[in-house]
Length: 440
Ligand SMILES: Cc1cc2nc3c(=O)[nH]c(=O)nc-3n(C[C@H](O)[C@H](O)[C@H](O)COP(=O)(O)OP(=O)(O)OC[C@H]3O[C@@H](n4cnc5c(N)ncnc54)[C@H](O)[C@@H]3O)c2cc1C
Image (cartoon, rainbow, N blue to C red; front, side):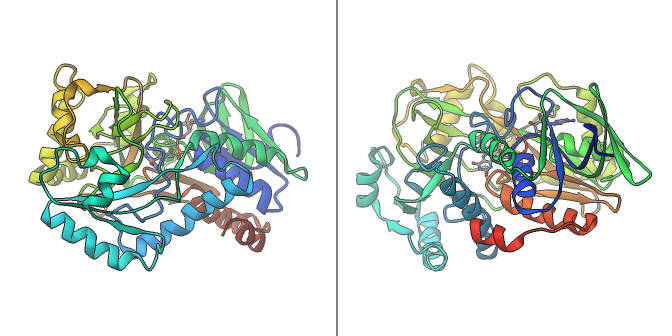
C-alpha cells in the first residue's frame, strides 16, 4: 500500500511547528514516508510569518515571566533552533544578533531586575546589568526625558531575532534533501475531516483522501477544531487572542527592549524592537484582544470559532474570573481601545512611554495587516486559562497541538516530543544521539 495516498505519518499545518516536525522526522528517524498538508499556497504564512509575531528567540533571559526552571527548559529548545540555523548557514540571514534587554522602570522594578539578574546570570553568563549611564549609550531614546530610575539586564552579542517564516521554509527544503525518505508537501490542501478506519487514519480534503498510520495536527487555533470534530479535547476550549503592532515612523530603536511582565498576563507587557522585514524600522506591541475568529487577517468562519470555543458554563466562569481581576479587566479594556482608529495612537503611546519617554503619538502609526493570533487554551477541568502550549494525545495515533507564544522558539523541542511519541507508537527508530549531537 505505497501509492501516493498512503503515508506513514501526516502533519497538518505548514507553520513552524509542522515544518520543524517534518524536518525532525525526515532527518532523525527511519520512517519511510511523511507528508505535510498546508491549506494555503505558502509555508509559514499565518502566525509563523515574520509580520505576525515578535521575531524573538525567547530563550528565557529577558522574559521576566519565566521562573528559573521554565527558563532552563526554554533555553534548551531555543538553543536547538539557534544551532539548527547556524548549522545551515542562516546566521545573519534568518537569525540575527540584536542587542536585547529586560528593562525595569521605577524603584520596584529596578529592585526586581537587580535581584533577577543575580539569580539568572548563572544560567545566562553573558548577561550584563546596565545602569542609566550604560543605557544612555546603548539606546539613547530610552533615557531622553526619563524621570524615573531604570536599570536593564541585557546582552549585546547574542542571536535574538529570528525570521520564523524563513526558518519554516528552510525546514521543508532541508527535509526534502533527506534522500532515503519520501517527503511530500501538499500546499493548497485543507484537511477538512479525519476519521479512524481499521488501523488507518483517513484524512479528507477537497483533493481526495489520504491514508496514514499517524497524524500530528499543528494547525494553530484550528487544531482544537479538528480535535473536537473527532471527539477529542472536549475538556479544552480555544480563546483566540489577536495581537497588533505599531510602527515608528523613523528608526528610533536598535535593540529588543522588553519590559517587566505582569505574572498574570505573560507576554502582555509592551516591547519594542527593530523589525527584521521592514528595514529595521522599530515595531512596538503586541497588543492583545480576544477575537471571534481563528485567523487574524484572513476570512475565517465565525462558526469555526464557536466550535473551537465551545462555550458553556465553565467557559463563562473562566471569563468571569478573569474579568473580576482589576489588572486583567483594565488590560482588556486598554487593548480594546488600541484597536480603535482615532483613539489608538494616543492611548498606546502612553504605554509606550515606559520604553521611550519622549515619544509622541505622531511618531507612530498602527501597523495595518500586521500581527497574529494566539490560540490560548482554556482548561475546562481546571477552570483556568492556560498560559502556554497545549497538547492532546490520543490512543489512536493522532496528536493535536496548540502553540501560542513562545511556540516558534520551542518548535524543535516540541518536534522532539512528538517524534518520540510517534516513534514509540509506530515502532520506528528515533536517532536521538544524532539529534542531540547536531542540535544540542
Ligand atoms: C503577536 C504574536 C507575537 C508572537 N511572538 C513570538 C515570538 O517573538 N517568539 C516566539 O517564539 N513565538 C511568538 N509567537 C508565537 C508564534 O508565532 C507561534 O507559536 C507559532 O508561529 C506557531 O506556529 P504553528 O506552526 O503552531 O502555527 P501557525 O504558524 O499558525 O501555522 C498553522 C498552519 O496550519 C495551517 N492549517 C490550519 N488548518 C489547516 C487544515 N485544516 N489543513 C491544512 N492546513 C491547516 C494554517 O494555514 C497555518 O499555516 C507570537 C505570536 C503572536 C500572535
